[in-house]
Length: 431
Ligand SMILES: Nc1ncnc2c1ncn2[C@@H]1O[C@H](COP(=O)(O)OP(=O)(O)OP(=O)(O)O)[C@@H](O)[C@H]1O
Ligand SMILES: [Mg+2]
Image (cartoon, rainbow, N blue to C red):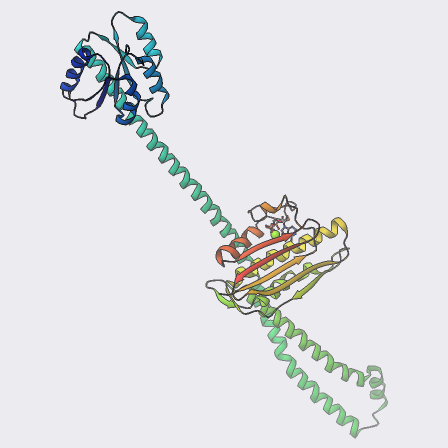
């Protein structure tokens, strides 16, 4: 049978008679046959031709076959090429030595053509099988690597989606609650507000009539006289005006709060030009109850240093969520500082400024416990919290980071020294 694949066989042998016989036989079989008669060139020859099989004579001057075999086995490029020794029939020790050095087989001289070809064919087939096995193996490995990569990627995407879901759920729950409250407040408040003006008018009318009575009947009967004295009419009339006025101021304040709450709960479908100070104030309004003194803990002082800021193109609901997260953390930190060290003045400062032409910065600074160096690397990881079970979920900063960095192409930076408070700075582009 003629070999169709032109496999290459290298014969390393210095004996011309041997060479001729084996060369002819292999050539007729259709193999590409290369010959090297100088043992000193054998190694280089293998490197450059990379044959599929080597026939190696044992007895050669200068470098013998064993030595060549050892060197080929030591080279990564040639160690997988099967080597068949050619040895004299009479020498069993050579056969064993050759096999122990890594040769796959031996053929004996003088050659039996049929046997030699059979052995060579078998080893070439084995070599081919090994090669294809190796190829499948590496394909399988590549496939596994790809799959692994895909799974990792999908896991990351999934956890991000999850985070996003939790974030939007948390936000929309808060938003719905706030919007609902604002809406419910609105009706009764407009009702009160709408009635204050007519009430004022009626009171003015009644006062006018009273004054007329006083003018035309300066000496009322004793029963009226007694009642007038008891009720202190002059004081009542004066105070009634003041009461109505302060009711009006109060109702207007509730209306402001309601507008603020509705601003806070705006849903974010597109970026809009936003007044960050309004967002900060709405967020403070929601957290105001936490700033007040509580039990023995004194009130948390709020210092606002607002610069004149341009409107910023952003998702206002998301940015408000960042403010809420950072302010809540600052409140937690000052509370903890009070619990641990009983520091008597708890302070949260909010500073806004224009950092460069297109960047505005909001700093939220507290004089709480600060952040130890060992904690800093994990701050923005989701689920990282140092707070007690049920107190912190460890999502605030990771969500805020995602909102500021990914959704607004800004920066969220923490500056803090342990026991000396903490500053979180949000820098976002104006547009
Ligand atoms: N202003 C701060 N001062 C001191 N430590 C802080 C401050 N802000 C955050 N940290 C630390 O970073 C951790 C992670 O904050 P993050 O807001 O992500 O989670 P959390 O506040 O623990 O829980 P969550 O906000 O989800 O309710 C906190 O547990 C706390 O250790
Ligand atoms: Mg938090």
